[in-house]
Amino acid sequence: MRRLWLVRHPPVAVERGICYGRSDVALAAPAAEAAAALRAELPSAVRVVSSPLRRCAELAQALSDAVTFDRRLQEMDFGDWEMRRYDTLPRADIDLWSADVWGFRIPGGESAADMAARAWAGWEEWGQTHDGDLVMISHGGPIRTMAGRLLGLPQNDWLDIACPQGGYIELESDAESHWRCGRTSK
Image 1 (cartoon, rainbow, N blue to C red):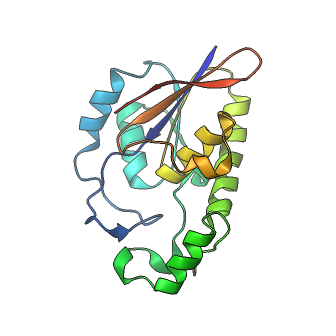
Image 2 (cartoon, rainbow, N blue to C red):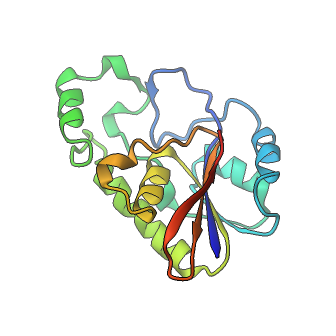
């Protein structure tokens, strides 16, 4: 049996209601605090692959001395919306996004489908070529994409997968590479 932990970065030092996507924002508290809580849940000797954005990188480096960084695990690029309040974004754009969550390309950024494709490519490289257990530290979008796809859920259900900041989803694979959900943190 193989295990995969999809770990989401801890809470960030960004005001609620701000779209920060791929912006490289700071953590709200030192990464060591979140790492200490996770250490009790994760195996001690495990491969760690992380988004290079500092909210993930700091956690990864607090968990392991040997971290591999992969830009494909970064959060969705919200382009012109980055670091703006959601309530100030053009209503027409929000309506278009709501009508086609996966296909709408954020002005100056990417679509959720673009993010999903690159996150999955990261999984294919690391998850499919690494034989042992694996920890991937990332963001809400990529985590939901990888978990949803591995569990065989319809794409429209991926966004409903719960993974709070600082939490994780543990997936387990049998010998035939059929994945099921093990544990999730609260």
